[in-house]
Amino acid sequence: MRELLGLWVAVVLAVSACSPEQTSEPPVSSPSVGGTPYAIPDNTDYNYRWSADPGIDLLTPEATAVRAYVESYYLTVRAIATSAGYPGFEEAVDERLRMDYDNLDQLDRSHYVGTQFQHLLWMTPTERGWFATVCTGDYSVMSEG
Image (cartoon, rainbow, N blue to C red; front, top):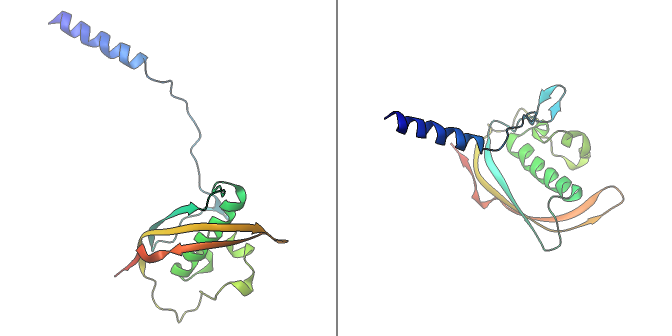
């Protein structure tokens, strides 16, 4: 029995010695707005699935800005508040291009679930940013309740 126990301890020590070295990395934090970390609206339990035409890299800064704008737009529409967009959305988007979501006479917010599919067809630079065509498939985002 002692030999079996000794063999078991040796195996455990050998296996644990083979594991990769643990490094301590700082935790990733959310961007903050006015000292408060950003959080998506509480009525939003859906995600986005992005695709793009050939030749468009969704991870470039330009495509990331397009994706952030589109996602923020839908977050603000469904939360009925321009402040629900990603940090900087409210300041970056011209007031004339935003709807007034902060009306007290709006209906109660619904709770949304599912997946919203987005496809970036093309994008081209302009003097002030980017112009893009995005196909939105919100057919699988549903309102609960």
